[in-house]
Length: 356
Image 1: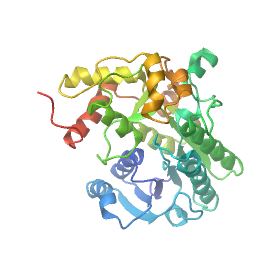
Image 2: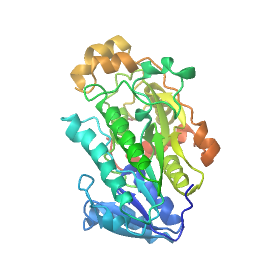
Image 3: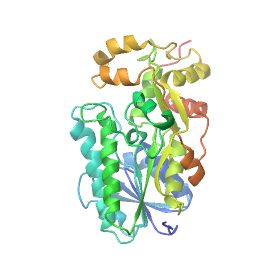
Image 4: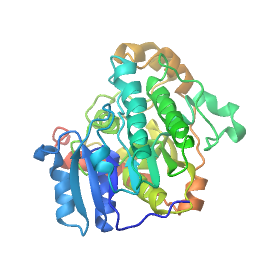
C-alpha cells in the first residue's frame, strides 16, 4: 500500500501523448508538480498544448529530456518523485517491422523506466499503461474464458509476433513490468488496462491510431460500410482519471480493466450518423464478413484473414467492475465520447466541407 505525498513531484513518461495529455491536465489542475519526460524539451511547438494547460492551472510543469529506448535517460526526470506514470508506448497499425516498431519500444521502454525506479529511492508506486490487449488476443478467444468475459485474471496467450503483434507487444511489456516489480519490495506496481481509447485530445492533431480510425469514419474511407467488429471503448478523459486514481488511491493494487462500453465499429458509425446525419460520408451499413475476408488483406497488410476470421462478427465483453469498486471509476456515455471526438476533428478542419 503506497501513500503518495501530494507535494512530491510526479513523473509522466510520453507526456505529449494522447492519454498523457489529459493525465497531465488532471495533475496540474490538482496542484501537482509534473516532471514531464519528453524527447525534445526545446520543441516549443510540440509542448505548446501542455504549456497552455500549465498557464491556467495551479500546478507546475517541468520538462526533462528522455528517450524510451535509452537506459538511464529517465534518471533526472524521476529524481525526487514518489509516483511515476509510464504512459509512453506506440499504438499504430502502420507497422513495417513488428519487433522494431512495436515490441522493442513497448518492452524495452518498460524495462528502462522500471529499472530506473529501482535506482530512484524516492519512488513508491509506478502506474503503467497496459491494455486490454494484454488480457485477450481475439474476440474468438472470449467464449473459452469464464463467463465469456475479460477479467483482470486473464492473460492473452493467442497473439504473437506474426499475429496481432501490437497485442503481443502489450503482453510482453506488462509481463516484464510485473517481473521487475516482483524483484524488489520498495515500490508497488499498478497497471491500467484500457480498451480502445476515444475522445478529444489535448492536442487536436493527435497521431494515435484512434485518430486514424475516426478520420476514416468521416472522410469517406469507410463510406461503403463497416464490419461488425466487437471492441471495448473508453473515453480518454475517463482513462486519465483512472490513472490518477490508480496513483493516489493507497489501496490500489494489481491490474484494472478500464473500459466504459462493450461496443463495435457499427455502433460507433450509428452514433455519428444519428448526430451528424448526412453531412459527412459516414458508413451507412455493415459489410458482411465474407467480403471483409475477401478484400481486407488487399486494403492493409495488417488486416490478415486470420485476424478477420477471429474478430469480425464476434462481440467483445469486459468486466470493468474492479475499477468501479476499488477506484470509484465512472464512465461517461458512449455518445458523448464519440460526438466530442468527431466534433473536435470537424473544428480542426480534418474533413472537407459538409455535404449539403
